Image (cartoon, rainbow, N blue to C red; front, side, top):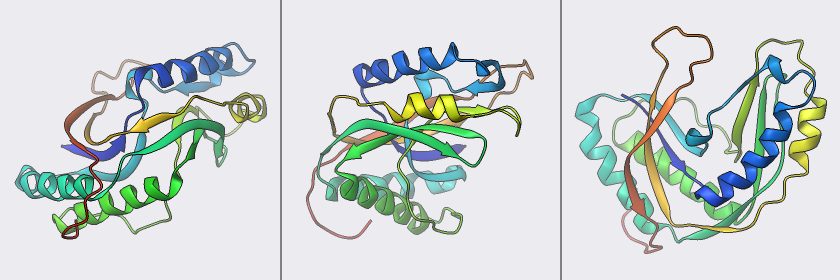
Length: 194
């Protein structure tokens, strides 16, 4: 199954972002953006790709250990931008050091469980809200709206393992569906490495 570790913001914080994204939908050129689905909004910590069923028990143990060692921390949606000329995202502010630590621990947990991970890159926290359908879509007005995002704080209290179900129907506009397959509370207790 196709998996990733993530932080999922609470519904009221996603509603805040939803109001901004609703404004984006009304901007010129919005039909050139493939918007991500609100129920799937998340902050990816470690993308694992296809993971064999035989690795799941060890992956769960190691992610639980990573959560056990990491304290709860606060974040808020803040600003936004784009990657290249395609992906639009909302950013976060707050305890980014602990967020990065949780991302590193999630990546290490997957590697130690035997999941073949891509080359490690520096973590950049973001929540993808849309992707341009082509290279010619001007993103400036969308980025300007996203840059003004100032959300309320929330407490991150769990690490989620999420399954990505890619579209299979071939219907235009169908989006991936995400389901949380496991979640562990952040407890902030040091112990064995994850």
